Length: 44
Image: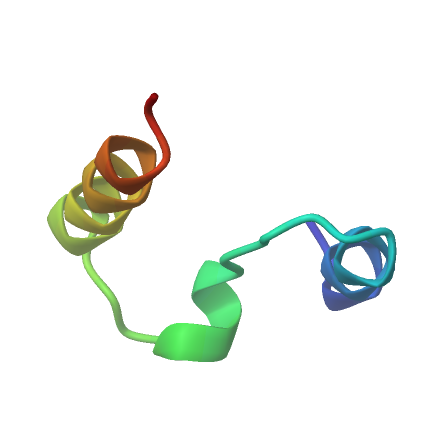
């Protein structure tokens, strides 16, 4: 995903976490941890 897509989705009201904005050196495990946290926060 590019930043442009992330920004467009945000403008449409979506809550987007774009990993490249967080840290260029983030590990795969950290990305998965963030995703699992995000999913867990938004389950009903």
